[in-house]
Amino acid sequence: MGGTIPFMGMLVQRFPDAQFLVVGVLGPESNAHGPDEFLHVPTAKKLTACVAEVLNAHARSLL
Image (cartoon, rainbow, N blue to C red; front, top):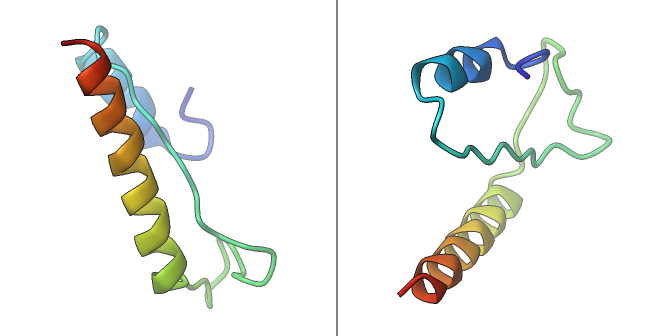
């Protein structure tokens, strides 16, 4: 874990019992890892809302 995001490997070592969700919102024209990489903010907001809904539903299912 952490091949392209080394920080995730550190988090896993520090918090071995935690579960992490790593998602990306970069499309084919986002120039990932390039000097002109960019994030499409409306898409990032939609993804954030979606992840929040999934986590909320999961938390409710544990009650």
